[in-house]
Length: 366
Ligand code: NAD
Ligand code: K
Ligand code: MN
Image 1 (tube, rainbow, N blue to C red):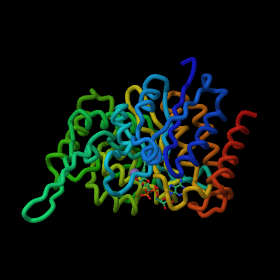
Image 2: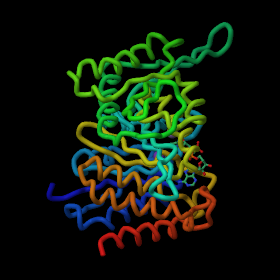
Image 3: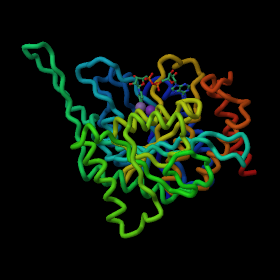
Image 4: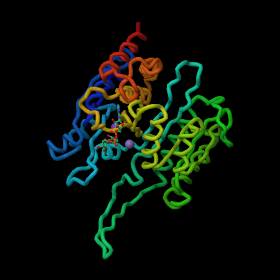
């Protein structure tokens, strides 16, 4: 690559406060990157109210034609149906075929010798399940009836399964995490399939079987990776009781969405959990959190999820050294616990935390 063009889509609410911090982080490591270009792009509820569309075609065109990658903030989608409105992030994932939503959740240890209690990756299928949004309301003799299609395909389940196995294989083996779980061995790379196929045997059954078929078809490539499965409800229960039993969790869209927000509680805040939406040809970093209307406009949002999303995006593009520097600066900010936003119990502002992290990135180049 002789240049790196990043589309910036802050969208709504705190997205506008935290995406600039992610941009700053990329600029701070620019000496290890090709010449950078940023393109500001519109999407979201505010864009919808001003222009009548939540995802202008110019945004999609610029992403496809001009950008190598993008950062998305968060959109304020209303909970009621609004004529003409459709979530731009759900549309973008489909439009750009960003089929894998990869969400690492890791607790910060106070000192380097203590292993994190939570160190897992939620791999969420990003294009189907109930998020195909094929809903219908009909008036029947007994009143209103609402129905939704839940689409699970072998193709999408297999490709997300492959991503999960690749990630598990690439991860350092976990040693001595002290689990009392019956099937958890001491040295393990693990993929846990999350499903509910005891009830939804056809849809979740297809997801489960498709993921299980991935290592079988891989001619020994994933022999070191153990495969487990857990029903989604008890998976959440066990996530809170013994988070250390999980390594890579692979799930259909809706379960993956819920599990990753839940896992965020284990490490202190949604404000620190990054993600990428990845396809074969494009990657978009995005904090897992939403637009947080309760704190928007106050300058107190945690920028860490977005800064980490920038690092995750760079890592996905092959720039692991600058990504390591960003991650180290974030960890060295969180671990001492002195410069934190309110969600983590501190009193620092978004810009104070951002500035502190940028200082720790710059120090690594001195
Ligand atoms: P949310 O993630 O916006 O907020 C949940 C809670 O976490 C709030 O108390 C919020 O203050 C806190 N929080 C979230 N991010 C934080 C941060 N960076 N720093 C500090 N605190 C943070 O979820 P919600 O309240 O359910 O949804 C609000 C809006 O966001 C809705 O309109 C929803 O549609 C939208 N949303 C968008 C996305 C997306 O853009 N992909 C994802 C989830 C929700
Ligand atoms: K988001
Ligand atoms: Mn979510």
